[in-house]
Length: 198
Image 1: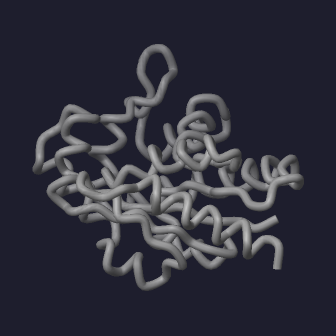
Image 2: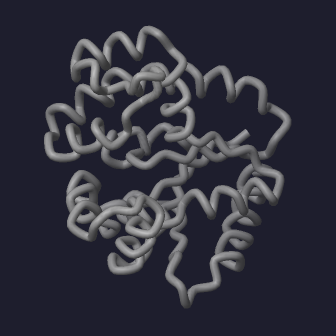
């Protein structure tokens, strides 16, 4: 079974693309969703986050205060590194368990926002990078997260530009409004199926 990484900058639309792979019958592990789940449900992560960032990290109901944490870490690479060092090992452990239950599939996809930045892009057999024009990404994130253009640009500063990610990609999906993404996904899917049989 092949392991395929799927990544793209904020607003690139990688989650939509993941859903298409799921429709094609391919299991997708969404690292960001798992991270959110573990943050809210694993006491060890909660304790570490409160220790590092204070009680405001969680609201009165014990749920992650995402806006507070985002403002804290997106302006500070040091704090972002601390956050990642708390969450990534737990996500990795969870992924290994998940992977062990998927042996009957030709390949699986691990979707993660910072595969290239964290240098874990060498772990999967192949890497798909989703790209989009900056103006389209900004528009999508502003609509999705109800935030300002400036806030989106600030978050983008913590991610590598698409040009850097493309350098290590095996497959590229251009997800701009005028592009046919379905055709691109099916082409990549067929190529990976073929590679899994070799």
